[in-house]
Image (tube, rainbow, N blue to C red):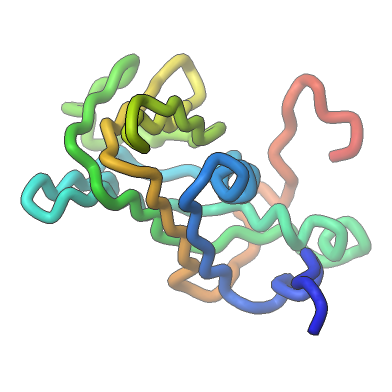
Length: 161
């Protein structure tokens, strides 16, 4: 038996779970530059679950796209379990047309496994989730589709995009 390789998942839907900070770094990298309407975020207080339906850029397939294929996105569910509370800052949740861009996920541990998970958004926005423990799942729920821009997202420090 051998360890999984990054390339092994290129053509299959992702199904990942993070239960520690190292796992979260992988999911954070994969959801970077995901976009979603503000209406697609839900906090179910009774079930203690926060869910986002995101349009995820397929970073894991970027090399194939650069070789002549199309850049792709896929709809994915980002599910955070064991959520005790949720708050937003820097965004107008009353704006039904608001489209948000997810840049990173950061976990800030508290005592006994508790802490808060920050979903960092473009434009200084943030979704802050108070969690009993870190439990984040990412699941692709549609087939990939050609990215409308036909380009990879760019960042000022990107030298390789």
